Image: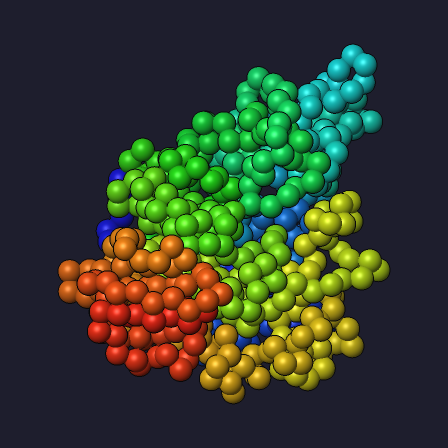
Length: 535
C-alpha cells in the first residue's frame, strides 16, 4: 500500500533533541521536557524545522541514559511527568511542530517488571518474554554472539543457571519478539503514545529484534572493512549475520505499519537501520511499501566526503529504493562524532546545503546548526557506558549541553554544573551570538530552511544528478512540473567554474553569503568548498 501524497513527513525536516542536553528548566543540571517546551519558538520559528524527535524520557535506571526502559507508559521524574509531556505535545502542535518519540523495542531494563518476573524462575509465565538458554557443558556462553558495548552478549544468571541474551549492556536484556505476547505488548506500548497524540516514532535498533532462529555462531570478519560507518571496537571482529536482521523482521515492520496507518492524521516511522546496501535498504520499505515509512539512511556518513563519494551514495539510494518510496538522510546523531569535527567548518556548511536540498526528509542533530564541535571530556567526567568500556568509542563528546548564550553554563542550566561540561567553544558558538551574525552557520541553516519551505521543487520534487561538470563538483537538479532548482557543491580547496545548459539564473543560497543574489547565465563560478542553490 502507499499513503496519499504528499504526507506531512515527506516535507519534514526532523530535529533530534538529545533530551538530557537540550535545555534544563528545573535547575538540576539535566535537560527535561519543560526545557524543550521553553524552546518551541526557537525550533518552529527561529530555526524553522518541521518536526522534533525526542530521545527516551521513560522511567529508567539510566544505565544507558534512557535506552534501558523500566516502564514504557510513564515519564522518568528526572525529565518531568506525563502532564509535562502532554503540555509539550500541545505547545509543539500549536506551533506547527510534529513530535516523534524514541521507541526502544529490542530490549528493556533489567529492572523492568517483565524481566524481574522472567528471571524469577524457569517456570515464570514471562520466562519466554526474554531469550534464555543453557550455557554449554563447559560453562561457556551458548554461542559466540557479542554485545555491541563489548564482551559476550550472554550473561549467566546464578539464580536459574541459564544465560540471558543482551545485544547491548547486561542491564538491557533482549526481548523475545518471536513470542506473540511480547509483540502484542510492545504494539500496545506504541498505541499508548499514539493515543496521546504523538506523530510517530523513531525506532531504536530494530534489526536486533529478530535473530537467527537456530542461533548459529557468527563468522569472523576478514579484511578489516568497516561494516557500518564507524569503528565499533571488538564488535567488528565478527560478521553479524545471525545476531540481527533475520528476514522475519519484515513481519514486525508490517505489524507496526498497520498500526500506524490506522491513525488520523497520518503517523510515521523513522527506523535506525545501519544498512549501507541501497537494494537491501530499499527492501525495508516493504514489498508493497507496507513496511517502514523511512529507514534512516546513514550512507552519507560512510561515503568519502568527495564529489564522487557523495554522488555515488545519493545516486545509489535513488536507484535502490522502490518507486514512490521516500528517502531519509542523516549526517549527525547522538552516537556519532560531531559533524563539524568530522568535516571541518567549510565541510559542515557544505553538509547543511546537501542535507536540506536532497530529495527526502533530513534528520538534523541538535547543535549541528551551530557547528558544535566534539568536546574533549576528561576521564572523571565521562558517563557513556560504551566509552567507559572502550574509551576511544565514547559518545559523551557529541552529547554536551546546547549552548544558548555566552552566560553561565551557556544558558543551558541555572544549576552550578551541568551533567556534562559545556563545550569550550560555547562562548562564541551559541544561539544568541549566531543570531546576531548574518554570516554564521546558524544564519545559513535558517536561510536554507526558509528556501526549502518556499520551494515545491526542494520539498517534494524529483532528483537528477548532472554530468558534464568538474570532477570535484557534485551537481544535481530538483524539479517538479512547474519549478526547478539546481544544487552545486565544490569539494575542492580550489575555485571551480563550468558552463552547463541546465543552470538556472540566480544563486538563492550559498555557503558564502556574498554570492547570494548573483545572476548566473549558463556559467557558474564556485569558490573553494562553496555550495550553492540556484533557482
